[in-house]
Image (cartoon, rainbow, N blue to C red; front, top):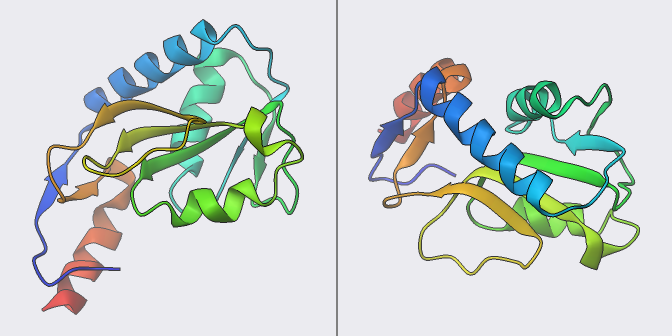
Length: 143
């Protein structure tokens, strides 16, 4: 939900590519084998595609009712934890899930399954290159 104080931080493609590189290195460092990448269509689709390309995955599962623990789950940001709570209930072995995000909101308690590339500096809304129109729409309605 949009807050009254609508501060934002824009992220460019170069930074996104760097965050994807960091995430892919962290995923490889787990030493685990994964069969696919899972995501949600709102938020995780673009980062999931970029990670799939970097890690050599051909399969990206979107908005699945069930998620296997050998699938990497990708989202754009770990913020309130609401998406994680929804996803963890869909996983066959929740303790084995690897949940990756570009950003993790500073000041939040993170689940042990979370791998992130960078912490946010504050509570600013992160505007990704693919979110420009959504950001404009949200700004309009927050006033």
